[in-house]
Image (cartoon, rainbow, N blue to C red; front, side):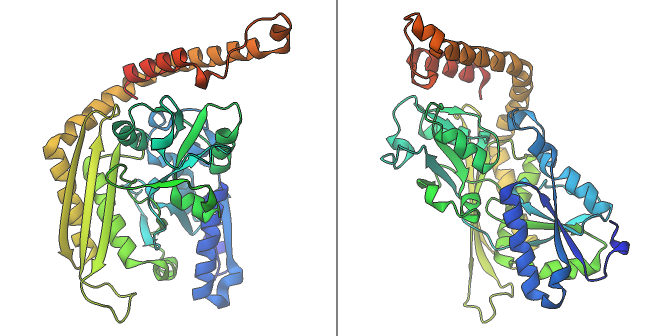
Length: 397
């Protein structure tokens, strides 16, 4: 329905259709309702399925950029079928379509990644406690690249799906995963913080740009919605996330590149009104890590800022320093590697699937009746672990 066909006080909130995305949209709806109680009954949520949601099998690094999670929603926004979009800030491309803008960035939840162990392995309190060769699931090359440097004896495998699906895969008794790496914020927003085994802190793992924050995208020419959404903006989070996004923009990276960041912001003087921006000290550390985890560059800056523009300037400086230290070469190699993997990926996946099917045959009642030896699940076979690790290393994944 076009905006001009709706009530002048209506507000249609667009979102992805996953449980986490809906929880975030309801949070935004409730917050808006607290600011505009007279219109709250006119606020509605319109969930949509994006290309990234539809493809739950292919590894993210082969699927393209962040538009996978936003394009369909942005089309609906520009066609005035919806009035705003609730995004995870980490999923928003650094370049928005013409006519779109970020109207607000909400107060940040815990931005760190975390470890979630399989049910039954509660004695495991950190990745360091896992036996050599344990399989850790994640869909993020940023996480894998950093964790390989710290935990070279662990294996890392791609795992896709929403949070419930990933946890289900983790907890399968015969499944390959001993642990998952997830964003803490998503688990917290779904009231699943009890599944968090341990948080991953810098310098071991730097989080994704924008992680833990929600961003609201609006039409640039829609003054009514822009004024409403502006009430949601939390300036300290906004300055931090804008600095992070500017760093990523200069590096020309997306959600499928091993770029990590950590930021903090501290007002210089005590504030009478915490909602009003004030001069602050911002600190940012950024890193770029090769997919193999063998090469990394880091940069850290700290300075006083008084505006969002000055925060973005800091992000630019961190990015330029990373480039000078060798980050450009890592990102260029990344582009070549992804192309090579795209060519080999189907064959590698077919081989793995065939091995899994063969293992299921060996476990079947018919094979047991014949007295054939049945091996344990492939995650416990050292020889297969070694071969899979060799394939992974060859592909630099």
